[in-house]
Amino acid sequence: MLIVFLVLVALSIFWLYFDVFNGHCIGLDCLSKASSDWASFGGLLGGIFTVVIAVATISTFLLLIKEQEHVAKANVETATFQTKMLKQMKTQTVAMQTHNLEMINKQAEIINTLQSHNALQKQTLELKNKMAIREEYQQVKAIFLIGLGEL
Image (tube, rainbow, N blue to C red; front, side, top):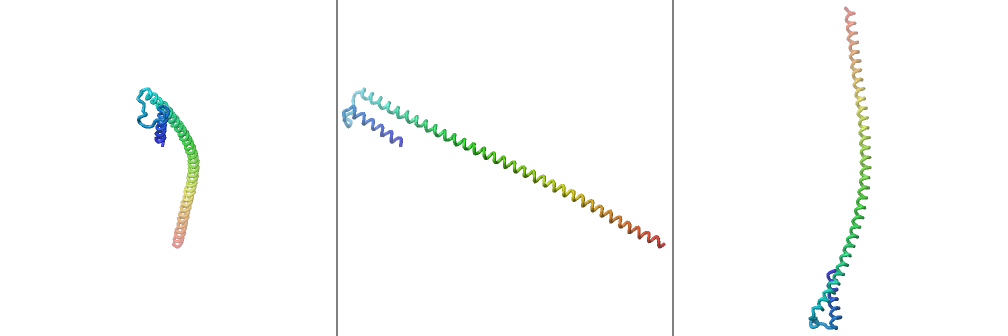
C-alpha cells in the first residue's frame, strides 16, 4: 500500500513539474534539453523524497516506541502475574508442609500408642503365663502332697 502511494506521489510530482515548467505541454516533445532544467528537477525530487523518507523514518521510530511501550507493559503485567502465582504457590506449599507435619505427628502418636498397647499386651501375656505356671505349680504341689499323705 505504501509503495502504491509513493508511486502516485512520484507521478504527481512529474506531472506538476512538466505542467508548471513546460507550459502545459504533454508528451515526450516537451522534455527539456537543458541540463539546468534537469538539475532543478533532480533537486526537486531529492527534496521531496528526503521529506517523504524523513516522515517515514519518524513514523517508524514512533511506531517502534509505541510497540516497545506495549511490550514493556506486557512484561510488567507478566511479572506481576508471576509474582502473584509464586506467592500463591508459596502459601500452598507452606500449607501442605504444615499438613504433612501434622499427619506425621499423628502417625507418630498412633505408633507410640500401638507400641504402648503391644507392651501392655506383652506384660499381660507374661503375667498370665506366670499365673498359669503358678497355678500348675500349686496343682502339682497339691497332688504331690496328697501323694505323700497316702504313703
